[in-house]
Image 1 (cartoon, rainbow, N blue to C red):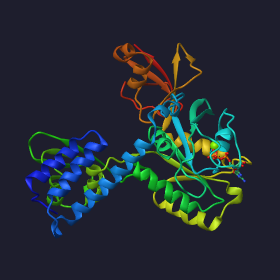
Image 2 (image 1 turned 90 degrees about the horizontal axis):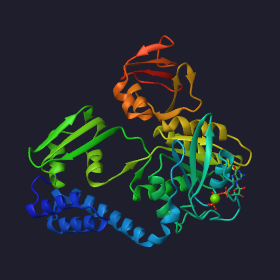
Image 3 (image 1 turned 120 degrees about the horizontal axis):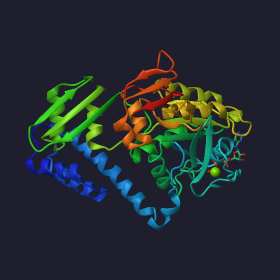
Image 4 (image 1 turned 180 degrees about the vertical axis):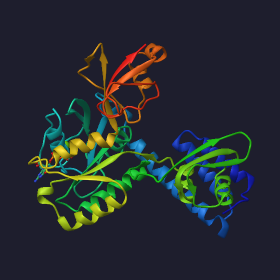
Length: 385
Ligand SMILES: Nc1nc2c(ncn2[C@@H]2O[C@H](COP(=O)(O)OP(=O)(O)OP(=O)(O)O)[C@@H](O)[C@H]2O)c(=O)[nH]1
Ligand SMILES: [Mg+2]
């Protein structure tokens, strides 16, 4: 680990940390690379920087290729409790799934790239409305990129959940691999991390590591890595289990974790052997998957349930003078009574004294609870001021 980089190189790396644009980041890294002498001790760092530069270059190329004037039709206002993106290769059955799960009537056809713009539909899960958006194919059937690749992944990056639709009648491993590679290039990962790392840069005070879980490297090595990346003063918080490469990832790259479900569609025509291998891999990596046949409805109900549970949403029904609201307030798991009060009315959160709750979060039905009480799916709540 190069503890003593030339001051100029460290300055360039600090510039990279501060850069706001892709071009600025590339420039700073190129400068740093030219200032870091090549020898055994700097080999790893130089390699890491070179990898990051080529990644950023690809991102810049893609950005230039996507005409800004076309941006507009690619944005769909969020509706319902969450926005869910359907993404995958051409003809994998994205439109068919959208049609099976929502009120939308997209064109389903046996030729490639039938869908050429984001197409929304509303799905009703019990009493919760969720928005599904089919994105134009990011790969052809031959697994070549399309003119939509960048924009479709960009859209998915902003959604609450991604459904990766795989055509099980064609090689599922090749499709999945290619899609994950593309996601990686665009800074998206779907693999649940074993750790969370926050790097808060400071003006002074050196490097402080606060480890809530476990750091599988020495303090010395971690702080050397930070210094070699131009970070001299920072508070670094680590939750869960992290190693040096996790730390590297969080400093050099800006990987966004997205919840995802892999949907093996056309299961009626599946290539079973390869599928089993991929499913094992997903299981080991804690990535959810489901088998469907949009043609005959197989697995679509399971998919609906999985969408709701993966989103981590719960439904809270407010009650007033004994009358329960018909429509729930849909919030993220872990929501407290006070947060619900705030959603109803800001003043209510300040004026509330206690609440009565019926449902899974209380032992006695109608139990009196305080503002910090954590609610569960299906709870009924009456707030008293
Ligand atoms: N056998 C079988 N065929 C399916 C299934 N789902 C979709 N198909 C067929 O596959 C073809 C493509 O389906 P689409 O839903 O249009 O696929 P898409 O992913 O939206 O395609 P693009 O919009 O072109 O990217 C159609 O001929 C569908 O009838 C399935 O589960 N089983
Ligand atoms: Mg389609």
